[in-house]
Length: 311
Image 1 (spheres, helix red, strand yellow):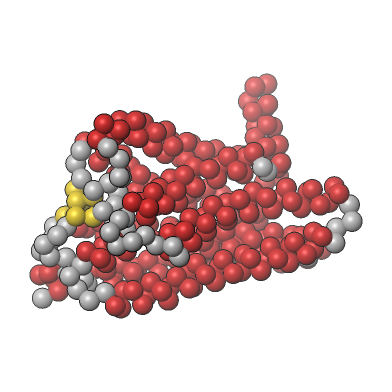
Image 2 (spheres, one colour; image 1 turned 120 degrees about the horizontal axis):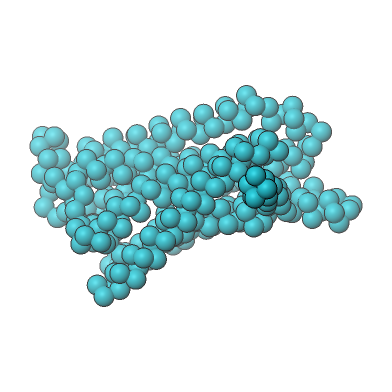
């Protein structure tokens, strides 16, 4: 019976962004430019980290994984959105929609865990500098990344399996530019109580707990920084943490705005706009934040460019 209900809807129609038809061309060019900046900027971070031996440290190991995650996270939704805007085709297959939900959730959770790992790295570096090399060993860094991937994948798989058991009969219009889980649950004709309870439970594990760990880490960092006697040491600590704090504020700020202050049932416009922030704008800004606010990245990029110029 469940399988028959699933096949009752073979595709969904994505209504896209709340913009006028005459503005489609302008927004298409804007979002295409932003997507290209996201991909090229994060690829540049990966290139700089791989080419400069001075950046082969735990912090930049996590940053390289964050850059890769940002590229793939943005690529899950943006190319399909751009294609729909260009071709005026709004359809996405049932299988394509379920796949998009899986990768979107998995990469979104992975972002949260990587930001937490980076916060822990900064906590050890500033609060326990004499033990940094011992604590942040290569094995621990690999373990943190592997655990992040495993937990993110497991969470996304369970979400996807629970979604796949739901029935979608009749209405197949999604008021979004991608297959958003919450929007799909509203569209389902089945009882979604289990799905909603699971979202609440997993949200605590992959969003609330990591965010609390980040706040605790930076609380300890702040207390340590205030005890630094020299202005130079204070500036160096703030410079090191400033980039990461900016990314944390962008990432969790949009999530809090979306899920703690949800829009009314009559309008999804705010949800769609906020989704643009964390699927496209935040990944695009990360390379600028880590390049312009981080002295190590700026120095490494300058060295690479100077070597390329002289060669």
